[in-house]
Length: 192
Image (tube, rainbow, N blue to C red; front, side):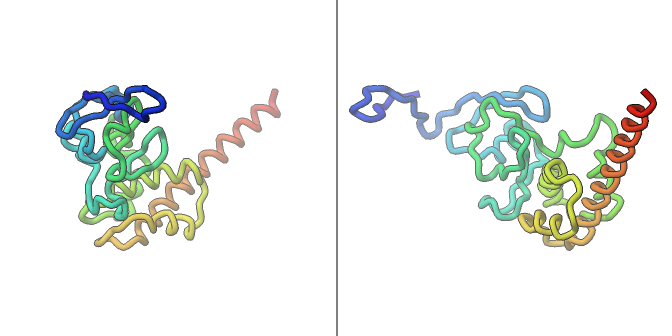
């Protein structure tokens, strides 16, 4: 790293990475600490794919428009093509590879399969990441809300109706489970 002065009045030196200089960064990827090397201008999407092997993160437009590169950064959906890899230092990054349990599919992935909510699959990983994030924040969305959330993604081959159906199906199943659990807790409280 080279040193350059940051403001004559402060007299403090700041470290600045030089072009082509590679830096080791460490992050938590799908619950596991991982490290790799990147240039200062490398996008998080490229770092995930090429350095860490998380190839489920797809790169479409490289402008944050299509949503194919959506991951979760510290639990919040974000476009990995709009973030530099060095910005991910010491942060938790979740990709589609981390969505499924050890065996099988997550409930959301299973709903996508059941509703035929994908065809070529290029955009699916990003859509799954956005949907997972959205369902945590809005557990019982309306169809209009799901369609609005999906408007941030471009899917050229499936049409959005099966995707909306899959998301609403998962929301309904999870709501029934929550309400049943609340009923059991209420019954146990009454019995006590």
